[in-house]
Length: 163
Image (cartoon, rainbow, N blue to C red):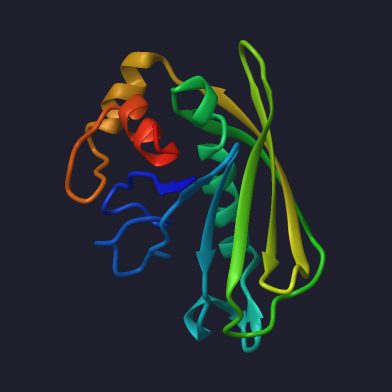
């Protein structure tokens, strides 16, 4: 089962009220988090080339959500590695997937990839994230909504996975 995760309205990646943002929504699919993004000319580094920073931001946010599914806490990136394999053609629907690799006591490790509907891989990422305290997680969740509703992170995840 898959379901949407909450978002912060002014976030650069997922903010629906940020006119300069990417405006994506994150979905839970089993043990992974995913999103779809269709870039346009405004996301170019130069004509016909999606800016690598956009790809990095999408991977960071998607991979950063993945360990939240198990740990029920948020984390912040301490290291992000992106391997760019090829440039997506303009206006191609992209699928970004993030998954948890390890949940250590001090660092959570993740991986992700950017593909299209045909399965062509454009980029792969690895991330290392520092887990936030429960109090800091609760403070972040106070900013996020799902369909206008404030939830705890645990409630939002339970709703997303259909429990």
